[in-house]
Length: 246
Image (tube, rainbow, N blue to C red; front, side, top):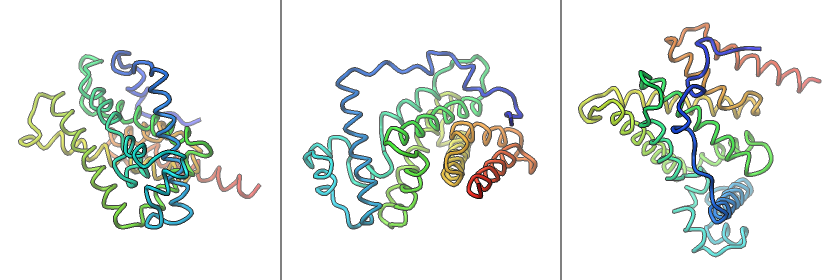
């Protein structure tokens, strides 16, 4: 079995105060169930009709809620496709600004935060029912629509900016004057996007959080050509090929 070359993930050694979220109330759990149902219906309809062929009224009717209820959860149908959630961005910010491990570098903190984010995204997709990697493939297929692609880019840019601001706060610097937090945020976001792409292509054969962690290990190691990430992805591809042959 392959192991992360750079040692244990920094996510495993962080203070519990940084990682733990308060248990959701019954009301919050019901709201989360409605949110998931709306997102599942949206992805189903978009896969069936194409993004332009689906209206918010269609989504609301299929989910047996009113359009007003839809807007209580998502500001647009674009947001429902890629699961925009301001609460998740705030949780990510808290993880980055929390000084859980004395002496922890900004890169290590970002690695831990985005590994946790990868785990949460996989769980979100899993909670939709069925194969999480298949849901991700549906999301990516929907992005051929220009309006949706533009909305997704704007969303990713806002998340990246939130990460840069949180890192700047952690480092006690100004992101308008210091390029390091911005560069780190852009690099980390790219790592997560690449991990999600390969996770979908592999059919989820390697856990998304592991792919993300190993990708960060490759980054920390200077992106050597013989990095473990390439071995891990190749092994997964070989395993998938053998499974399809069998």
